[in-house]
Length: 172
Image (cartoon, rainbow, N blue to C red; front, side):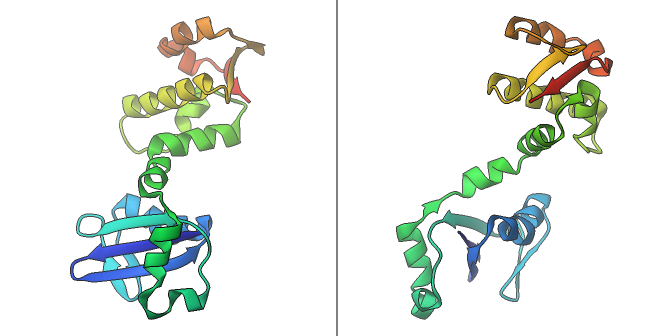
């Protein structure tokens, strides 16, 4: 379970026993987009507030009474704020999408960036994501159905023509 604290002096709000989906929808997605997060009738923005996320055992209602909830969370849980926010980065998000969509061509990988930014920025994120997934052993790269050796990855990925070649694919 996840437990969240939002602080903006002199205010604070806490949410306990959130699932990963609830944490993502209610707190994380608005936070990383810079939108206000509404919690306990208060509004917190990333520019003015501090977000802390703990992962730990679920707390029963009686464990949260009399202000004991957060001290229990910090004693029995782990602060996962940095990890959770890092996992929501555009690169991490694209890696998840690539794994879900594989097999796909390199040009389709770039299209998955869903960025309104510059084409070169989209290509850079896609290249980094594919490169990391290859080195993590989570995908392989193929040309016309034939898997390529790791020695062939760099020359292939550094050629812009590869990103337009429908015969170059990544698969799981």
